[in-house]
Image (cartoon, rainbow, N blue to C red; front, side, top):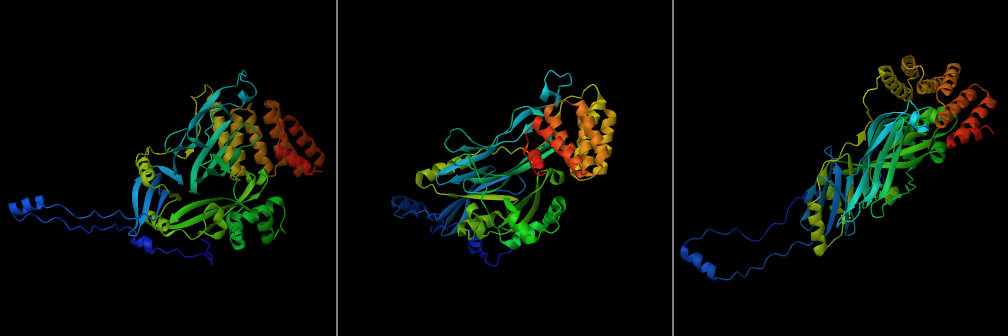
Length: 487
């Protein structure tokens, strides 16, 4: 559902409708020569006609977008005759004042190793399990010079398993870009890791800006709270059934991101709201909700308040539909404009790589049972995240049968059984995992889950002991908060 604001100013599309017309020359086409003498006479007569002056430029914009074929950028020029596309490239360009940048991918490679390698590379079980393409983004300035790093692709070793890495453009105004990234995998703890967020990058400074405190109208925040069962899940997880909608919106919800798109030339904004949640319920420590709007005054700090200029609106109308869009005002004049336009027309149009990558496994090991166990382990973790605890239990039990000396399937099944409230079997699995893997980071996560099991069973003293054991092995905010909550 798309929310509408009664005070949102309508944007006229009149200019957009007239904008495609190019200026018409007042000079008539030349007539064919009637005779040779007429031609000779014309050649001897000087041409006194004054060339028409070029139309004065009123405003210019760079609009970048993706309509399903990768990033595109168009240079739009507005004169008295209307708004027209001056140039277009299959690339992403942004501007601020007279400065321009070419935004492009800068991916890298990282090797993936078994968890045993994290504790000791001399461990007989230590082995390279695969590799993954890590995703990066940079902005190359017009005129040369080092590119500005926006998202840095990791090249360091990764221990565990990588399920997926993602990077996507969410929009932008001027030199500020919104970039969403996510990382899902298992990094040698007791359970999987799922994280991500939208970052606000300032290309002109090379710095990541703090997300502004956007305050949407209460009615829109309530709509977000109802989407994705956000409020319902919050109440159930925290066991706070009496939390009112107003209190939830006021005390627990924040706007953390927005995605910009185009629908028939009109800007659409999809706002992302979050409320804090524990890992046991959410996987990424947050509950999520969404609401859609048009441009609105509270978004002024992001450059998303109405009204748009007539030239920009005409340009957006010309683009039409796009899954993501952004724009920058162009301000170079004279020879600087000529140089900027020539630079833009020469941008490299190499297609962007996919915005999602997965781990590529190394060559199969001699023990096929071990490989099959890892596949089942990954399946079990995904089923746990999807809250299919019975399915996860079955997959992880098969993994244990194939490789009974592996610690990770036991730890993963312990976690799935914990969430399914099968406390005694969960404890047995976690205890078993501790006997198979002596690494501190792994053991710290297992002890934390043992604390969760004890707490759900009403044994506060045992929960405290397990949390303290976890913190001795590795300091962690989640475990520390769990311990403090017992006091």
